[in-house]
Length: 175
Image (cartoon, rainbow, N blue to C red; front, top):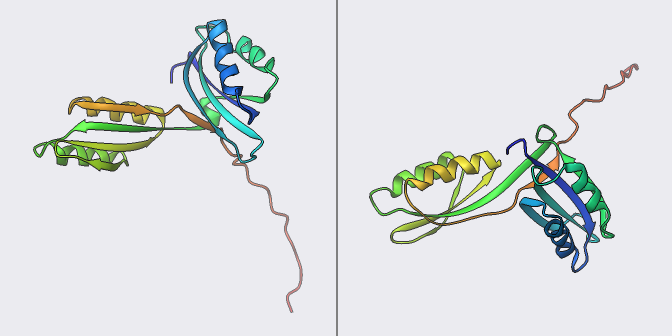
């Protein structure tokens, strides 16, 4: 991810048309969306939209202010790369006849991918991980001939607190 991209986690009411209103806001204002993923959250009343925004098209503060104007937006959190876990999924169909099939399978293994479909001269692979990992995998697969490629939008959550609570000492006699 470049320094021009920022990840926003937007909690919205889980109602019809909310995603369309968010997309329309970006379109009207000329803001560029680099990646977008949406799904219901753990609370069925809300959905989480993860938007990777291009801040060259507009300042981040302006984007956040405009999003908050939408009635169905409940909460917006900017997820700094150092304070978030980000993942993406890619499905890649690669030309893989008998001569190179084992090489493609080996690379799939190195990237912790899974072969999900096999044809006579092609393989479809699923790889999940950080966006940079998927970029690297995609680049290596280009040498074999990518037939088809689909990547999901990035999903992200804030990292968990890793500070430990001090345990108070308990003294007592053991009988």
